[in-house]
Amino acid sequence: MNKYEIAIWIFMLAAFLGFELIRRVSPLLHTPLMSLTNAISAIAVVGAILITGEKEATPLTRTLGFIAVVASVTNVVSGYLITDRMLKMFKKREREPGK
Image 1 (cartoon, rainbow, N blue to C red):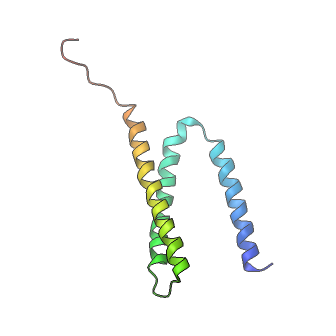
Image 2: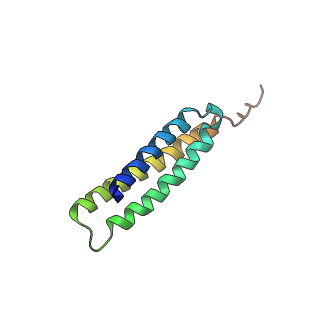
Image 3: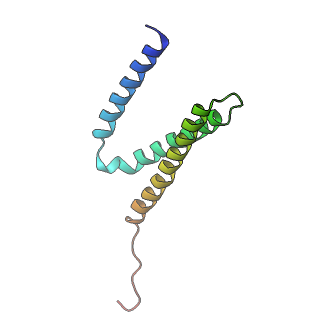
């Protein structure tokens, strides 16, 4: 097996295990899991920026890196907005005076 075949096998195994793990998570753990995936996406943003900004990067590498940066940043921002909205649902509402 060459290194590309091994990389494909590792990717397929990781994708399968990730899918099974997320599918079996209870709704109670959704918010902590969302926070963890946001942290992973933040790492992907840094990696994509590093790859895109390399001096010897090809146009294809720069294009794919830019797409990765945009997708990861979108995922991070929307994940934090959704998590914030979910946490606001658990805050107690203030009672209006006179009621």
